[in-house]
Length: 429
Ligand code: MEV
Image (tube, rainbow, N blue to C red; front, top):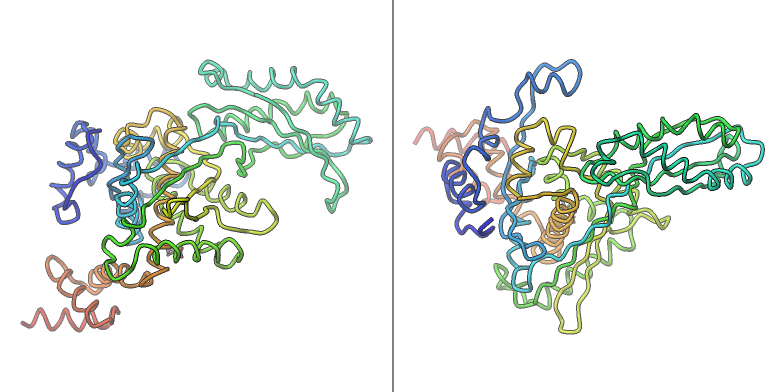
C-alpha cells in the first residue's frame, strides 16, 4: 500500500475511484474487480452457502480513507447502507494522523467453547477430576482440527465453573480455551466441544448437555488507542475552539459510561464502523455484535466500550477494547470474492491484523459521532447524504439527485413529499 490519503476522492466518478484505489493500494485491477457490479457473489456460490437460495442481496461498498494503523497505511472497505459512516471514519482517521494514527494490539486468538455438565452427585469433586485430566482433555480437543494444529493452533487450557444459581439446580460448565489462529473458529471449537463430551462424561460420571462456542470472546480482545491534538479538532469546525470540542467529547463519553440508555447508542456508533468492515470481509457480524454487547455489560452494568480523556499535554485521547472474533480463512471469507478482495485491499495476512484494523475503525467511528453530537449535532452532516437517498426514493436520477438534495437541505425539509414536489418542478423547468 502506498497511501491511504486520496484527495478529492468523494468527487470522483466510480470508475475513477476504482482506478485510484488500485493505484493507491498497489494491487491489480483484477484484485478489486470483485467490488464491481456482477463481480461479487454468484447465485451459484450463494446456493452452497445457505439454504433455499433465490438470489443475493447487495450493500454499498465504500472505502474509508486516511487510516494509519500501527504505522501502516490502510484503505478500509466498508459494507454498509447508512450515510455519513464512511465519511465520518475517514475524517477522524485524517485528524489522527498528526499524532501517528491508531495504535492497536490484539491478544492471541483464543476462543471459548462451553460444555455444560449436569446430573452430578458432587460438583466440587467432579470439577477437580476434570483438572486432573486436563492434559488428556487438551490433547483430545486438539485432535479435532488437524489443520489448525498444523498452523500452531489447538486447545490451550480449561476453566471449570460451578453454576449454583440456576433454576434447575447447580451444574458445572467447562470452558475449553482454543487457539484458532487465523480462523473465526466457531466450527473448530464446536467440533472440539462435541468430541470431548464422552471423555468428560466418563471422567465426571455426569451427563454432558450443551456443547457450543461462547460469543463472549473475552480471551480474544482487540484494543486501539488514538491521540488527537486540540489544534486538529477545529479542522472543518472553525467556529469551535479545539478545547471545547475535546471537552465536549469527554462529557459525551461520561454520559455513556454511566447510563445504559446512552451507552447502547454510543456503542451502536462504534459498531457502525466495526460491522461495516466485518461484513465486507465476510465475517460473522452477529458474533462480533453479541461479543461486544456482552463485554460492555461484563461488570453487571452495561457501559461504554470506549474511553475518552485528555493527556498531560491537553490532547484528546481515546481507547477502545472489545472482543474481536474475526478470521481471514474459511467460511464466507473464503467463498465470497468481494470478501477476498477486501482482505487483499487491506494487505492483511493474519486474523490479528484484521482485528487491529477493525477495532481502530470502531474508535474512529465513535469519535466521529461524539464530535458531531458534542457540537452541532449529527443531523446537518447526516442530512445531505440522507437527502440524496430521499431524492432517489422520490424518483430523481442523474444530476437531479444532487439538485433536489441541496434544495431540501437548504430548506431544512428532507421529506419524500418535498422531494417529489421539487422533482416535478425541476422536470417542468
Ligand atoms: C447513528 O447510527 C450512530 C450514533 O447515534 C452514535 C452515537 O450516538 O454515538 C450517531
